[in-house]
Image 1 (cartoon, helix red, strand yellow):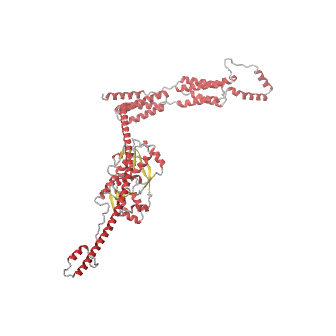
Image 2 (cartoon, one colour):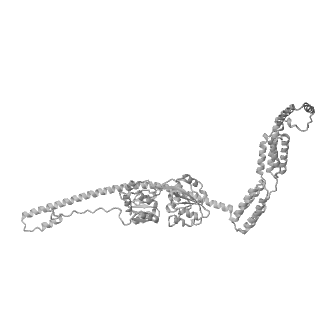
Image 3 (tube, helix red, strand yellow):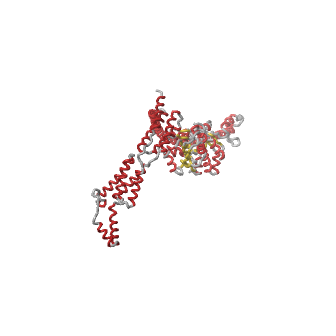
Length: 615
């Protein structure tokens, strides 16, 4: 494997590095996770939640990063299927699909804000409501361009980017055993990495090989002094392909050092090498005396034995060192194998969860498609052709407006309905709709000139009078104070005046065919008040029924009872009489205009459309 036993520093945020780390482990490499950007909750979560509760008001949602998708996905249980989504890169697109977003817009080549803005779906945005989910700070290119293209944009902070929590010592200890490269996917992460390092660590980082996925990030890393920068494809798979291409053909581990044989002893040491000892004996002169020959043979044998022992000792120590190295390497391989097995088990569980989630999403998608087909079939069955549906809607609107006008006399509501219908017809440039629009214009002019009677206000005034009847004073209630005042006046009057009053009181003339109000018992006074209330309620009912004759008769009867049985010198009674007088001036029985011209016009148009439809 090309990347076996290599170590790479991964600087992505923690919520975006799991997939890349898994791919590196599958390739035999070891990921060194050092997030240079920490993703936290937004500064104002309430503002984000408020926007998420009214997602149905928007036509398009734009996400600048997978972190924005993660934060929104954590807060939204079900994404609206009709709301389209625009994302910047492949990772964001995959995350959007996982969250159940059906219509996802993403660039095909350049995976940045410029690439997304070049998409055909984002060219004409006049009058569209767009919400942009992003982090704190960042470029304003995306927001400014969307506004310049006519979009009604709401920018929402979905998350906050903060400096890394790792310390300089932790970073140094992480790469101290060896690091084959640094993976950088944003300029901010590169700046945080070099600002975290001290002088020695920064110099060590500049000597490493950097792998970036965007030209802008490559420029930022080069400005920070990196010596070797390699540009890879976008996405986790693209980064892994770039690493494989960069390390193709180079060994992952250094080869074992060759065993170097000890140098043969020179003549000055007096210990000959094994290769030269035998020839020396063979070249010994035959004229040498036997004693000298024996001495030289012993020395040669001792030298040969010494050299052999030295070589054997060196071979033993080298073998021992090699065995220890192999044991360490085997232990490391076993540990990595165990970690890979545990990681594979976790990944297997995650894959099972993802498969189950994908199956659920597929099932929901199939249900949504089935519902959409049913709705389209139902709409096609009910509505038919677009023009036929428009005319049917117009006929229904006119019928309801005519009924409301005749039943309730609400001219304002009928006029508003005609205005809305005329606005809908204004966008249809078809000759057959011209007679209908002319009839609508005539009916609108008639309703605008028609005098309007405030039936609701008149009904409320009658209700108020009926409620206040219990507080109006009767004539009998006013006699007691008058008698007291009369007795006081008599005391002050003279003798002759008192005598004249006494004689006049001897004769009293009363009509026997009508009851005297002063002699009404309390029970009849209660009935009198209830009868007056019934008169007022009957007048209100006649008002709502447009019965002018009954309305005037009940009001006249109520006024007569007030003048006959109630104290007309009391202010509440006088106010009630004045209110009855103003009510009698109203004329509820008005001949309301009809909308027959417009109804006939729309029916004629529907008949023409029906005749032109193919059989």
